[in-house]
Image 1 (cartoon, rainbow, N blue to C red):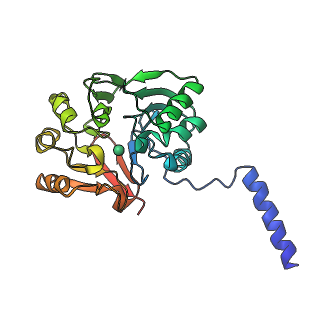
Image 2 (cartoon, helix red, strand yellow):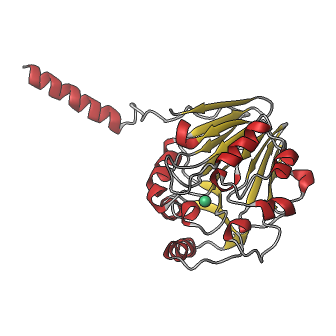
Image 3 (cartoon, helix red, strand yellow):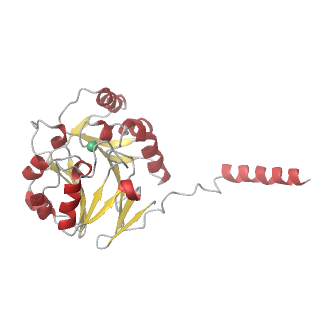
Length: 284
Ligand SMILES: [Zn+2]
């Protein structure tokens, strides 16, 4: 008797679920009107940043390693995002483009940006092939590019300034998000040389996604002074092989009075803003 009652309940659940009356619990609440949200995904050692814009558009900057691709894809879908308007591959290293392969294979995307530089790795070849197979053409990531200009919202690319850097990291697309009085600077893995060449009159931002996972090769004192951030976000894996973030970088940030948030400690970090106030939350 009891068993059959349970079975009936189970059947009822299946029917209701089928009718979509029992929705999957979303990982994060839906975006409120007039808000912008920036998710610094915990992809271990790598970068993946998802932006939900107040105009309803969305952008993914990097996708972590190939192994992280499924996680990134699931995270995007859990927010109810079924299409990415913009995808930026900051530069061809595996910890940035690897996960983009699965994302682009499974989620429709609008424009795909990448700097004009190649890399002789299987991951890079597969990434390019995937984008081409999906019928996209690459748009060239470069300084001076206006990606979005929509009322109070502006998204600009500040780097790469040149196309002949020796180090792949310096080819990194640097993206600046500006919504009303709040700005966020996403550095990719840009190092000191790129920092020096970026138009310094445009780098000021409350939030800095620190270049190159907090490596000492980036975030020079001079650059930090120009950006003058209140918060710094570092995306890196726990106990990674590179010792990221480096002590010197953390010291420079601390010396400048910047509050540091790290994905290896906090997990995925979510910034929410109405264009005036900034709020952070994390999943740990
Ligand atoms: Zn990297």
